[in-house]
Length: 286
Image: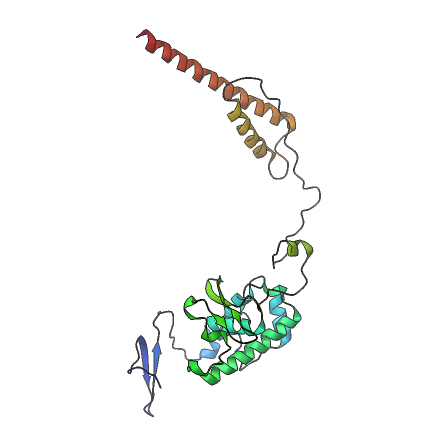
C-alpha cells in the first residue's frame, strides 16, 4: 500500500488489474524509461544486462576475471548494469562496499582475494535483506549505512563496525564512506605505483636509447637590446627543431639558426631605439 492519495505524486503510468489492484510508475526526477517489448529477455536493453546476483549468483571465477580486466574503481563497476551484475543502484552499492570494508575508489584489479570474497558475501546479504524489508525504511537494521547517508548530512554509523561518514563523488555519483573501516585495494602493488599512492596500472618504462639529445650551447652576444627576448625564443626554437625524438637537423644548423634569430632581434631592437631617439629630437626642435 502507498501512504499517499492515489495515484501518487509524479505518477507517469498507472496499470489497473482485473483483481482490482493497481500499479503506478512514479518518476519525480524523470530519469526512468518505459519500453514495450514482445520478447524482452531476447531484446535490448534486457539482453545486454548482466545477471541478477540473487537469481543468477556470479561464480567467484567470473568475479576475478572481470575485476582483473578493469582499471576503473569498484563502485563504477557495481553500477555498470552490463559489466558484472545488474540491479545494483547507488545506495545499494555504497551499502555493499560498507559491509565489505572496501573503499568505493579502490581500483578493481587492485582488490585482494579476501576482499573479493567479502564483496560477494556482502552483495548477497544486502540484497536479501533489502528485498525482505521492501520499502519499509524502519525495518532495515539500525547499524546499516542506509539510515545515515541521505542528504549529505554529517553523521555516524553506530556499532562496532560503524564510524563517521564522509561524502565523496565517485564516478559522478555521491558516495557515503566510512573511512575508518573501508580500505582501497589490498593486492600487492608494484613499487613505483605504491610510492605514488596510486591504485592503477604502472606506466610502461621508456625504451632504451630514446633519451632526448641535449640542446646545443649557443654563444651569447655581449650586448644588444632585445637579447633577453632572443634568448628565450632561441630556447623555444631549439626545442622545436630537436623534436621529441632528438631529430630535426644537426647541432651546427640549430646553432646557426639560433644565432640568426638573435641577430635579427638585436637589429630590430637597435632600429626601434634609433627611431625613438629621432622622434624625441624632432619634438625638441619644434
